[in-house]
Image (cartoon, rainbow, N blue to C red; front, side):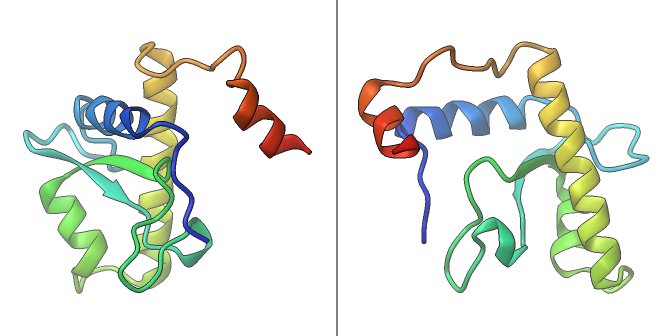
Length: 116
């Protein structure tokens, strides 16, 4: 099942906020070209021709993004662990800097569908 955020603008704002962060790849002193890196895990909604769920993203510089997606120097497990670490750091930074804030209450139509 493909999940989209309730409002398309939310996804655009999230991606802009992620791209505005410094690189969160473990050990990176800071890359100049940060990209929004989506999870490659099927558990995160990734599939043939499908990106992962919109919130399963990390702020990763281009060279690290390429290494995680198609580099030959990392095992599959290493790729997953490095991406997960970057994702956790990204989500933490988004909340710590106020770029993302919890919503007090969802619109009624989404709340009812989600919790019935």
